[in-house]
Length: 159
Image 1 (cartoon, rainbow, N blue to C red):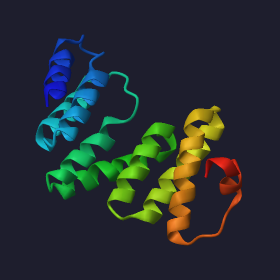
Image 2: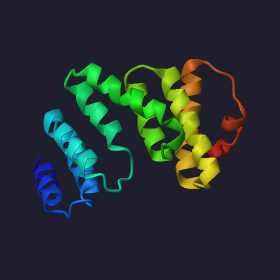
Image 3: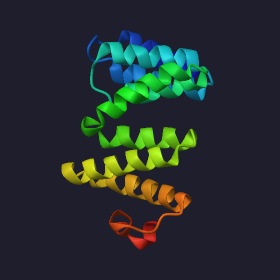
């Protein structure tokens, strides 16, 4: 919890318009400290700041809201993200796929992982591509699906 407190303090001290990443990191620390309410507050602050972040803060906020049993609010956020799927970053796609796996929505997770793979290919993002390909492969195996062209992109030693 100490790390969460420190990260929250740092986020408050950051320059407006540039504190979103700090709030996002603080929220992650609050989630790890099992305080989803404080996490949700930090994720909302990241959204309000509007500055650059490594991933869309709405994904994190949705996770915190689900932990608070505020499912309807989380579903609204997930719906908005889905409506903006074509502009999502590969990292956001990865986080959404992982969230949907946790919720037991493997078809939804597969869709987001596939969108992320497509975005990586379009943007030449090889690092995130490997992560998403592996995630997508595991989801497809869990769903009992046959190998496809994206699965074949994986190096056999990395499975």
